[in-house]
Length: 177
Image (cartoon, rainbow, N blue to C red; front, side, top):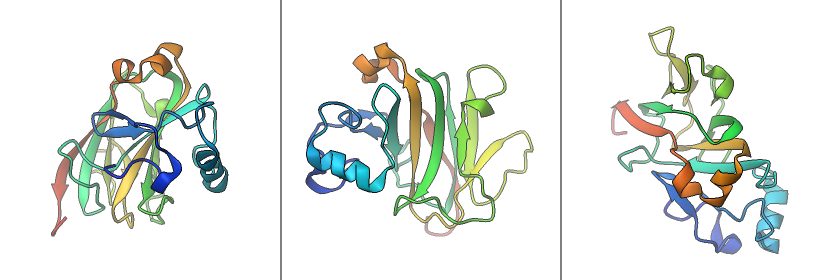
């Protein structure tokens, strides 16, 4: 995220950064300028108003290393400040990678035992049938997008104080990854 959430001069706002996750807080707000609005209209990935959804992106693990399909990760978290949420994997070009697994997202409906949750990010399904999974097969370097829908008002007013984002822990890597 060193270069920021959006390319070039589109967004000049200071990003909201929380434990490796980053958001441009002007997206979906009245503060967004014409270039940002044009970018959103063109790419359509961040098209909802802030009262409807907020978006955070992580492209590094908890040690600050880039996310890579050569590694396996454990993503874990707890209750998030909104009505519904999801975490989705996108390749370096911002698209869903083509893979055999087809598992590219994890959301609040996948949480079965209370408020804590975890899933693995790997090229193959974990051997533990109880462990949730999303596939990073053919993703190259990738990022994870956290979407929080119908975010709580207190969170919108103080995001760094009200959000404990998911932890992205690197478990193993193969080769030079």
